[in-house]
Length: 332
Image 1 (cartoon, one colour):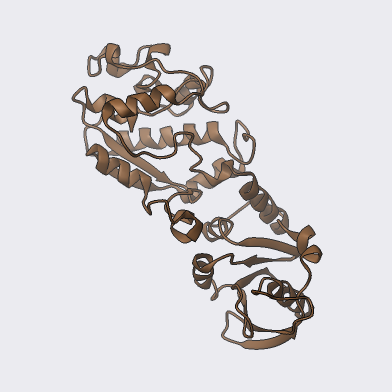
Image 2: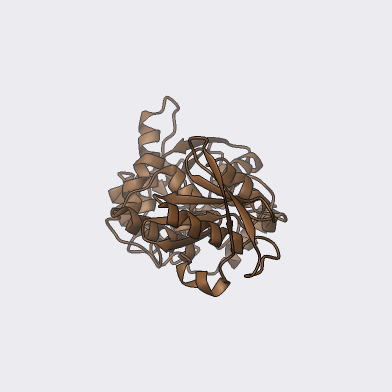
C-alpha cells in the first residue's frame, strides 16, 4: 500500500497484481475459523486496491508455483518458505504481464525494504531478484530506493527520486508513521505472515504429506486440507483430518465425496476424514480416534460412529474412544 501510494502521489497510474499460490492465509482460514471472528473477512489484496483506488488483476499461478515450492534454487527459509525464489518468480510473472499486456505499463514496483526479510530482502539479494526475474532496472522499490542504484523510471523522469524513501532494517515504525501520514487507518499485519509456508506446523504437515506419498508433489486440494483440522497419522499409509470446530467441519464436508468420512451418531463430535488406503482394522482404529474427540467422551463410553464411503456406501461401528495419551505420538 505504501509503495503504491508513493507512486500514485507522483501522478503515475498503478495497476495491482495479486498472485494466487494456494498457500495464502487470509481469505481462507480466517473466513472458516470462529477464533478469527474479530478479523474482517476480506481478501486483503482486493481491499487494499479499493482503498488505494486502483485496479487489481488476480493471477492464478498454482500450477507454475509448484516447482518453486518443491525445487527452490536458493533453498528454504526457516521452514518450507522459498522466499527468494518466490520473489524472483512473482517479479518475473509481473514482467511477463507487463510485456504481454495490451495496456501501456512501463515498470514494476514492490514494497520491499532492505534488511526487512533475512532470506529475500537483503542488499545482496536485491540485484539477484532484478536480474533473474528479467526486470533489471524496470524494478523500482519506492520504500528503499535511495539505498539502491537509479532505475529506469527515475532516469526517464517518470518518478522523482527525491520523493522516494530510504527505509532499511526490520523495524516497521517508519512505515507505520508513513501510513499515518497517508491516512491509512487499516492495513494488513505489518510483520507479514500471509503465507502458510512460513508456518512451522504447516510445513511439518506438508513434509508429512510428501513422506507418505514417497515423492515431493501436491495438488491444490492437498494444500488446502493442510490448513484445517487436527492431522493424526497412526500408520504410514493413512492419516485422519479431524475438524476442530463448526467452520472446519463444514469445510471438510465438501470433501466427503473424495475421502472416507466418520461422524459420531451417539454423541456430539467432529467430522473426520481418512486420507489414504485404510484396511478394515485401520477404519476401526480411526473410529476410536474420532470417538476420542466427541464432547464429554470418556474412555469407558460406548460411542457409535457412522462410516461414510465416497461411493455412497455406509456402515456403523460401536467403539470405545482411545485415551489422549494413546494418540499424542501420532499428531503431525
